[in-house]
Length: 234
Image (spheres, helix red, strand yellow):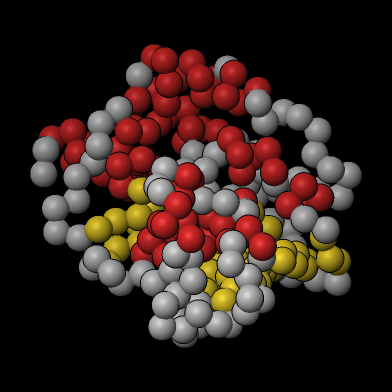
């Protein structure tokens, strides 16, 4: 492990241990990445999130509690990944083929309706979203917790058996007794477009050091447990 890689890991560990605000965490990581990144964090990048939210938008910090997937990518029978709904980064570590990317893509698709990774690959890759061995039922459920509310926010995308495109999934959003028409009504559209809901190991390395972080023995994905509509470091 290089000295710089070790420093990055130490910094992230310390940030997860101390009760600093998301804004403080963002500025610290921006300062580590360099002057240009720090100025972005202090200026324009933050200003992009100051637009008005929908009248009924869910305010406060939102944390991912669990993600359930069935019939999608490498996941056939329904499987659930449980997370600790609290601030910080959550590393999801496992062998190649264990389902990390499938859970990550499912979460991104559930929250945004698309996948950044799909956009970077060819048509055959994008069309292979259904699990080959158990293609139906197919669906994704993301359960989140919001500060100040005892009820979780549940987002669910479901596909009909004859759907051929990932974008054909229907979206249901429930918070207690209230049903939302979509992500826009939640007030999450802009922050989800500005801040990606997940980071690969390479993304994380580029964020904090402008280099790729190499994981030699296992694959790694870093999940932001904080999905706040306000600026947050992932």
